[in-house]
Image (cartoon, rainbow, N blue to C red; front, side, top):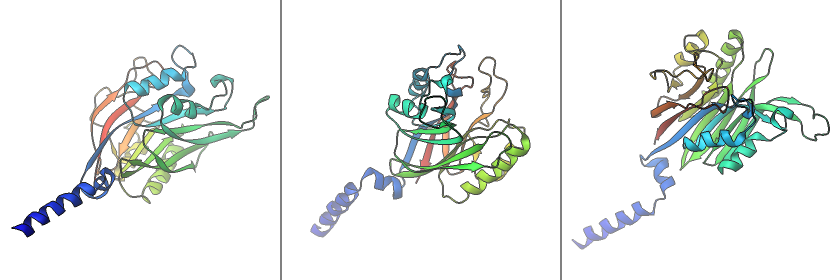
Length: 269
């Protein structure tokens, strides 16, 4: 009997000695977070006013913990007051961040920094890897951010993109993103303004690859553009098949020319 009691206490001690991160990595714990995709139109709202505090409030009110942003300026020009918009939003929220410049122009006037335009990821959790990868583009250069985020011990591969304006470019770019994502392990998230609707061939190519599922595919009234009487669903959150999700929402806001979308997602380990 004494041996059984000692063994029981020893087993309990070993179990309690594991950190939450260890449990998340190998002992079946589920980790849930709220995520968002948002084309912020360099912080300019329906009233044509530049207001990053308003963008931050939309994110804060939604309790979003990982956010993929598109159309983000960095020292770009007077339209955004030469702001480093990703850093300013991250400071307002107290989040980690990474920026991917797809346009890189020489400084304007007396400015010392190059003018940049691209995408950004904000995260409540540490970003442990980050890279911006150029996509084959006609006209404006496009890219995809590839990051790895440590969400309470679960390492999640997060992608963020803003695709081109013509079908041929988008089809090529989606193929490149799929090849890139195939080189990493699940779980995965993909945020983006794809500039195309779910009826398009390029969208169907993305879904047919079975690497990602569309979190909003069964949600009614999920259109995001324009913000008044939206007619098009062009903003998306995708997740790898091992990720579950609920509580999807299109958020009504006049802080940009797109409506943001958010969802709760759960990673199973």
